Length: 103
Image 1: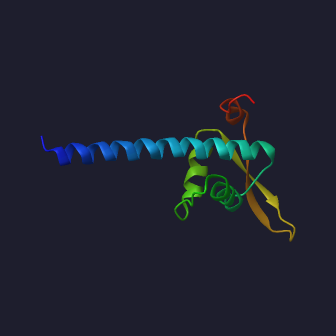
Image 2: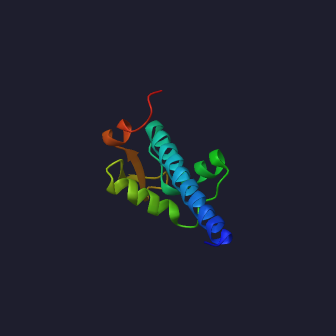
C-alpha cells in the first residue's frame, strides 16, 4: 500500500474526528448559553465566534439548531422584539439540561 495513501487516509480521519469534537463543543456551548436565557440564531452564532474564535460557515447555525431541535434538546419560541416584531428564539428543554455536565 502506498505511504501517501495511508498518510492521506490518516489526515482525513483526524479531520473528521476534530470536526466531531468541535461539533460537540458547539452543542454544549449552545445548551449552556440557552440555560442562561433564550437566544436567536444570530446571537448564538456571535457567541460561538467570540468564545471559540471560530466562524461557522454561513447558515450552518440554523442547521445545528434544527438538529438540536429534532433531538429534543432545544425548542423554538416566538417572541416579540423591542419593535413588536415576531422573532424566533430558542430555549433549552429538560432533555437538553440533562446532557449538560454538572457544574
